[in-house]
Amino acid sequence: MRTAHVLAAALSCAALIPAQTASNVGLTMDGGTLTVLYGQSCGAFTCQPFVAGPVGVGNAHRVYVYGAIQQPYVLAIGLTNTAPCIPIPGLANSLILLGPVTLQVGLTAAPVLTSACPQARDQYVLQFPVGTPIGVGFQLQALATSATQGPAFTIAIESVTG
Image 1 (cartoon, rainbow, N blue to C red):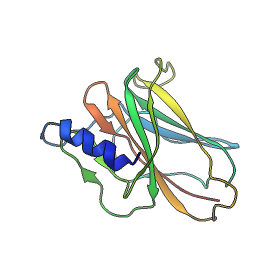
Image 2 (cartoon, rainbow, N blue to C red):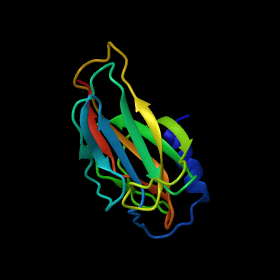
Image 3 (cartoon, rainbow, N blue to C red):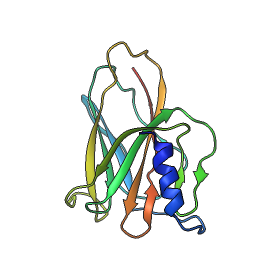
Image 4 (cartoon, rainbow, N blue to C red):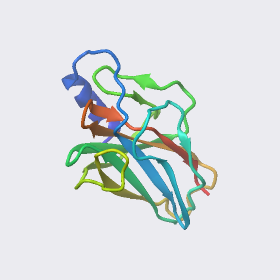
């Protein structure tokens, strides 16, 4: 299922209202074997992606989508994009990905007690297969549910295969 289809469905249900911002959705990715976390669980939205270290081919990286408790989200990936982000009426924050492809459609779980915001999260394991070329730039972004603003885009995370 392509993210464009999910966005089209969301747009057909969204009221045409001015752009809103939501700071209680987020996206993080671990550093694989490194003990580092890229992105943010919640905070101010920015159109500038968070830059992460390289993602080793064949290595598993945990990606966490944060949003309202037991609510749906869509996680997507796209090639590195330098075009401006796109505000979409009825959805908080802006779309950063260009030509996104859906990685996972899920549901956040129980509350996360360590998060700075009252929210929940779900996990996706990102792993590029052996044989993937090194140096391929990509971005991750999710459309999650904000407890206060409804559907909202998270910040984006940008990396390369390594």
